[in-house]
Length: 337
Image (cartoon, rainbow, N blue to C red; front, side, top):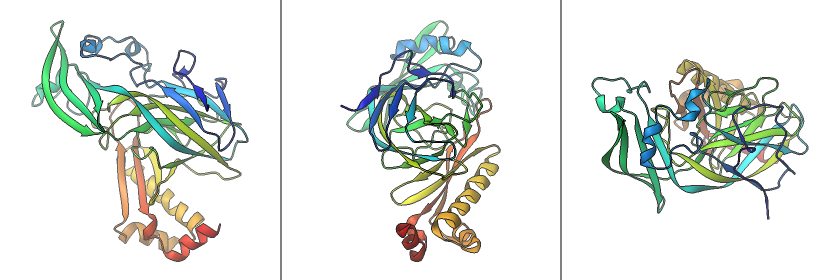
C-alpha cells in the first residue's frame, strides 16, 4: 500500500509556508497519494447551496480562504538549488464537481447586455462516462434558489490547478500565490503524462498540491473551472544541482516553458525567452537557432492557460514547442546526456 495523506483539517493548508511541518516523507521514485479538496472547501455540493454564494464562510476572510492545498510532502534528498521533477501517475475524481460565479465576476458579471450573468449562479457537474454533465443551473434571487434547465455535456479533462513547493521566505496564499516555485497557475497540461519541473528552495522541497479541475477552457474565462475533489497519485525525482528559472513542463511530444505576469504580453515574452534559454542550455541550440525556432516554426505555440482578472492574480502563459521541431542532432545530444 502506498503512502497517503487523507483529506482532513490538518492536511488542508490555506498558506504555502515553509514553516508547515511535513505530513509525509517520501523517497525519490516512491509513489504516494494525496486527497485534495475543491477550491470552495467543499461548500457547494448541491444546487440548494446556491443560497451560500454570497456569504459562504470562506468569503469572509481577506484574502479568501479558498483553494486549499494538501501537504506539505517532504521528498528526501532535495536541497536548495535542486529541481523537483513531479510525475502525475493518476488523478481520481469525485463523482461530481461545481462551478459558479457572482455579481462582479469579470468579464461579464456586471454586464447589462448579459444580464443573466449578474445573478449568483451555481452549476453542479456530474461525471458520466468520461463527460461532465450539467443539467441545471441554480441562481440565488430574492432570497430563493431558482433552477434553470441546461443541456450541456463537456469532455472530462482532469488536471492539477495548483502545485507548488515552498517559496524561499515568502508566505503565499494558494488562491493568489504564483512564482517560480509554482502556485495557482491552472495549467491544463499539468495532468497525467506530464513531468513538472519545480525549482526548490528548502530541504525536502515541501510540495503542496490541490485545486484539481475536472475540466476547464483556456484562460479560465470567468475565474472558476469545474472544481472537484480528487485523489492524485504522484512520484518525484530529484535533479541535483540543477536549477530552472520557472516552472517547466515535459510532455510526451513537446516541452513547455511557463510564466506568470501582467500584462499578458509580458507573460508571453517571459515564457518565450525562457523557452529559448532551455533550447540553448539543454538541447544544444545556438541563440540564432532558438530565435528562429520561435519565430518561423509552425510547431511553436503560445498557450494562455489562465487570464482570470481576480485581485492580484497574474496571467499564466505556456510557450510550447514540439520535440519534432528540434533538429535531430539536438535530440541525439539530449538522449546521450
